[in-house]
Image (cartoon, rainbow, N blue to C red; front, top):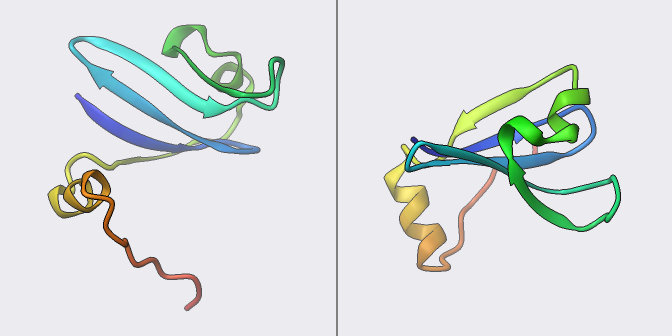
Length: 79
């Protein structure tokens, strides 16, 4: 269980796996073109995607703390 970041062919979203249920939250390019939360197994965006990149965010306690406390999280933007 936890929170996972998911990269798709055309956009990103998150999978929330809690209490035995899984949901996919993303800014849908499909109608209604808004942020939606849907059951993982009912997501058209996931069904039509051919490439996935998945990372578990909730195992990183320091990242979760900063996120919940609205602290700056430094990111690498170039190498």
